[in-house]
Image 1 (cartoon, rainbow, N blue to C red):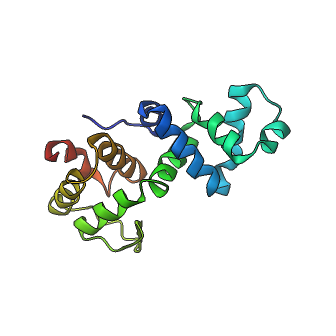
Image 2: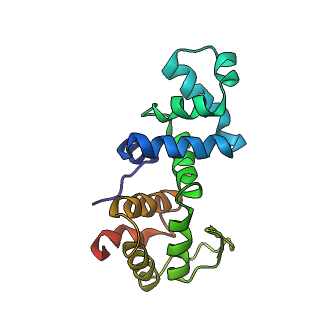
Image 3: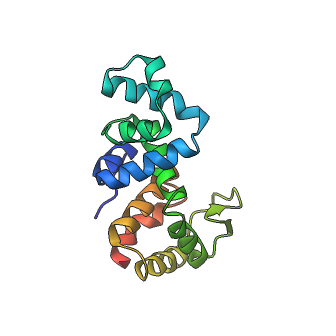
Length: 162
């Protein structure tokens, strides 16, 4: 399956349950730089006044945001990252361990932007294929690629290895 070229397109491909899990994780640890944009997406989708949206509890914000199919590229990207830093964190750790990349609980330790080798990528994808559903793997690889297409370019071949 080819990678989606935007975070918004990948977000739209997720199931309702996956979008809710992502939005729940997002509001649990909200990145300040996208919080306003996420609230704006809720305001627009639910036709609320901004102060009403801000007053919603995190659970209601998550349900509301999960229902927005086009929250904007920045918010969609943050939601995809939140999905993987939330309930899918073991996927990150398994991939990074198998690829030989140093990390702390799924978060890369180094700011090294060296492109991933094909051998490392293949090892990471194979490790995931042994334990996780194909759609989770595809979403994760696509999310990594969207974050830094140059560094993760080789992951576009990941479908061949599954």
